[in-house]
Length: 225
Ligand SMILES: [Zn+2]
Image (cartoon, rainbow, N blue to C red; front, side, top):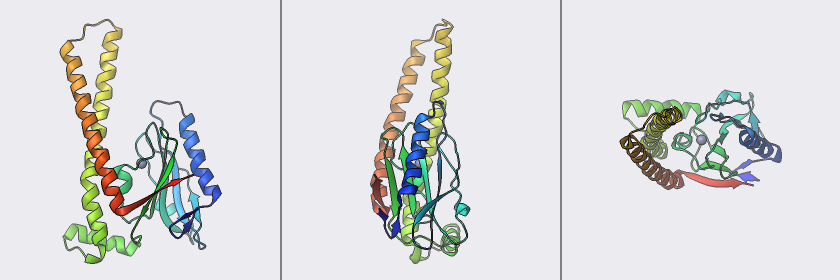
C-alpha cells in the first residue's frame, strides 16, 4: 500500500493493528494511548520505531526515534474508547510531520492523515517559529500558518473540554458515593449535572464538526485496511 510517495509495508501495518488490539484488550479504566514513531528509510519504506505509552488522551511521539539514515514522518497512536478520527491535537502540527496515523478502539479502524503540502525541514521549522513569534510571516509558509491559525483555537477548545470532562467525572463519582451511603441528593444537583452534560455534548459536537471541516483543507484521509 502507498501513502503518497511512501510505501506502507505489511509489517508496519501489522504493528499498527497489534497496538490497537493491545489497547482493546486493556481492561483498565484510564488505559493509555499506545503508539510509535513513523520513519522512512532510503527506499521510502515506512518503518515503526520506539514503543511509547502515553496517558488516556495523549502520547509523546519522539522524532529522534528514527535511525541515522531515516527520515522522520510522524507517528501512529491508538485512541482508547473513542474512534479513529483525528483530534485537533493530532492535526495542529501543520507540516511539521507528514503523517498522523490513528487506531480507534470504538470503530476498530486505522486512519492516516497525510499532510497535503511539503513536509517542513528542521530549518523550515525554525523559520516558521521565528515568523510566528515576530509576526513577519514568510509567504513560503502560508499553508502552514493558515493551518496553525485554523487548528490552534480548536486545540484550545479541545483542552478546555478535557478539563470539563475531568470535572464532570469527579462530580459523577462524588454523587455516586453519596448515593451509595444513602445520603439525600438535592434534585437541583442532578438537574445541574445534566445541564453541564448537555452543554458538554453540544460543544463536543461543534468541535468535532469543525475539526472534520478544517481537516479536509490540509490533509488527505486514508483508511488502512
Ligand atoms: Zn489522537
